[in-house]
Length: 147
Image: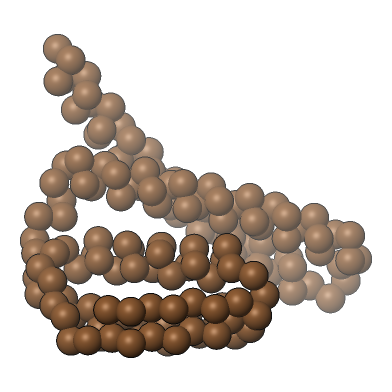
C-alpha cells in the first residue's frame, strides 16, 4: 500500500509539474511584453520585475520537481561519454552575458577529462553550479575553475 501511494504521488507530481510548464511560459512571455511597454512608470516596471522574479523562482521550483520525478522514475538511465572540458567551455559561452553583466572574471584550467553519465543531468548540474557561482558572486568578483 505504501509503495502504491508513493508511486501515485510520484505520478501526480510529474503530471502537475508538466502541466504547469505551459501556463508558466505564457505568463513569462506576457511579463516580458509588459516590461518592454513604453507607457509604464518606473514604479510599475519595478512591480512587474518583482513579479517576474517570483515567477522565475516558481518556474525553477517546477523544473526541480519535474527533474526529481524523472530521477525517481529512472528516466535518466541512458549514460553517454561526456567531455567535461568541452561542456564547461560551452556553458561558459552560453552564460557569457550573465558573467559580463556582473563584471565577473572567469579563469579556468581544463584538462581533457571524460565521464559517463546522463547528458541531460550533466548539463543541469553544470548549469546550476555556474549560475549559482555567478549569481551569488560579488560584482567584479572572480570564478576559478580547475579540472
